[in-house]
Length: 488
Image (cartoon, rainbow, N blue to C red; front, side, top):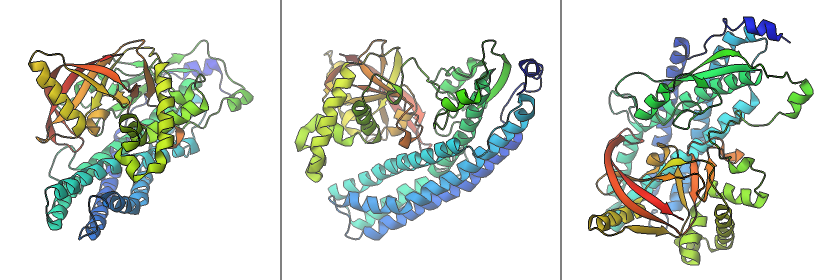
């Protein structure tokens, strides 16, 4: 074991770990390899859907047909992402280790099974998230087509056009299509997550490690990324202003993190092998919480039943909220009546959990809106413009996020192609359930930064700000930020 004195003399050797030109080239190479694979998945999905269009798809058979199309490409999608993210993760690990193994006196495992499990879980999660967005787009096209009594060949044409937006390069720009956006984000995430995990490993060895948010310095850098950069060097355990531990901050983000060792922790105590073994976990990355609130999966004050219910909400909130809003008469239970009793039980458990909660810090949160909420927001703003109080209430649970980008990616455009979102402050002590970015292990790491508001909570619409934003497909859209205030 290398002595503390020897380590102190080696600080000059390992002064800074950053993205080198060689790794940048590798990242670009893997993006160029992954994007065509994802385009091929989109093309295969489109072809499979078209096979069923001449008569098989109706309003009542949309979901089974979509199930077939997406199930057929799930493994192809997951394996494409996993193969490239695994390679870039190993190359990032190797490059990092080459700089620190000798001077630090210990080595990293390039094929860390925990990191590999993390990448596998993330690939599965990403495929699910991508499929959900695509599925909703296609579902809307088919439903609208039937409502407007369009011929099936017109519906097929609109589906082809939608897939063309996702899988056909649209000319020179930072992100050419949705396939490249997915490739850029996942490759960057794998490389950055690996560097972060290994830098955290240094901190666990007693080194004091700081990190810095690098942006590209051009006019396309977002305000949130600039704010992270403006913090300068911060301790590795601290989150950046955006709430992230490392880049990318949002899909297509071009930022990267630098790390440097600034000294040794004078209070650090070397653990014996027995102590190290007893502290080992199966986590793919080191657990460092971004906030004062703790994710449910790591709380000792919640029962296993409560945690399982929160787990089910995170995996799929559809049936719980259907039971909350419409009871047994919900459309979901007309199709699956056997699911009502369990969803209703989970609704009651979740309601009780949130009622007993109290946030340990304040958050600025956002919620991307779908068509139902957009209609209600417009009506409330109209009421407000007439000088009346605009009060709304939702009999379902309301999920909000302290991650500013993710809710916008989930927002659906209105009839004019414009996006809408609620924005609101949550205060220290508010009765809301913090879920955050740490979730049930089978879902991997996710970026939603979720906080859950209880059902039947009133909120008031206070006004709106209109701005512009680039959506998940790279399209510039008008964005309505509707300010609300919750009343508990």
